[in-house]
Image (cartoon, rainbow, N blue to C red; front, side, top):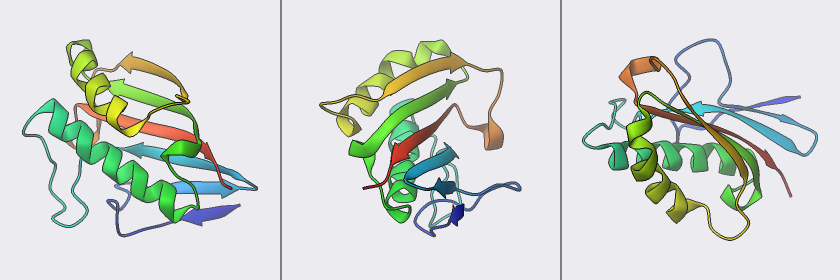
Length: 125
């Protein structure tokens, strides 16, 4: 088992790894819209927040030797299901072709005041 760490995504805000690689599988922790350079939450709109989340996730995947095209499953957490359509619009620009399996669930709250969090499991080639 190998812990994955990159400064291209925000540092964990708790006792966990950005991702863990086991054999050829990469388990990515949930990413929120914290800008890794400024350390500030990107929350101008839910679309911009989702963009930052997916950029962070993409950076973690790259650090682990994978990419968005290798994602097998995503989990999306939203503080309001009213964001579902806008999040899907952004998501569809990052995931094309063979879409990963996915669930989207509403939650009461997310860390750091986030409105969207996305985690994933990917293969490493």
